[in-house]
Length: 442
Image (cartoon, rainbow, N blue to C red; front, side, top):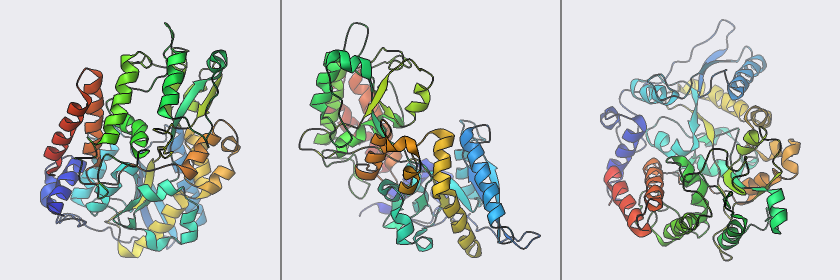
């Protein structure tokens, strides 16, 4: 592949948010010359000290869950391992989690284990900031994880991360409105096509209610997370299989089809291009295309009688594909060799069945493991059984690519350009041009 080294360095520089990374990295998959491995420290009781960073503070239920897990780990492994937890909030200032990770990659201050957003696995792996973990887990252990968890954590044939939680996207619908309109909802095993969804949205649209809301005003990861499955449903993607080329993918026929559909929905007023906050919850939209986090919000609106349908597929000949992916745990590229067994044991503990169950209790997100699903009653019946089915059968990860962030951003920009009047193909061709410029890809 031509320009691979240059493209890799360019993508990592975006990840590190600074030109310093360009001079520190020695090449694809290499570690920076400024990095150093942590030393194996021993506590007073003889246990090996391990450091772990997470992206949530103890002000959130998820952060409290991490703290409880570390306390339990230290109790179980007393005299052998002792984990020291640092909880760092994600924020836009210099003290934010991402900033600290990126700075530590450059200056050699990474912890032994830390949380990594699933979509950044390729960048971290390519920078040498995380290391493969295949050798520490058996095939039987890995078989319990949702297939998508393995997919999003695998880069160049090696597994780098595992998580305790997953995510999914579906269509929430107002049962009372459906009944009044005589509409039969789709089931997990038989999702609607886009034509069927369009007809339902058209039928449900009134002067005071949109047929569906789809967060079309978003300018971030939301848009690709929601709509990539419709592209994948057509057996395509926004990047080539090697994760580098956008031409013919980001502006390919499948992506054009999806943006044309979005444009048709908005132009006809069946979906709002600028939706009001909580429009579905307040009865201003009959359906909502959104994620697994929505039930926690719906709990604040007890009057709505809601159900859940699966992600639609493009047409009758298309595959059923659904979204997935969330935060994961990784072993640092700076972890000392003699500490890696302990780091792997800590990672195993943080992604156990009990950890995954506790994560659902903390933040309502679907677990990463099938064994955890079986122990959470809510996922064994409607409506949440839809998400369990999707994560076990139709989930497909976003591209594991060093250039993914650029492609995602350009997709979001293209959607906004289309909604403000630009021709679909022109908007996507422009997105590819910008992608090529930012990644030095031709």
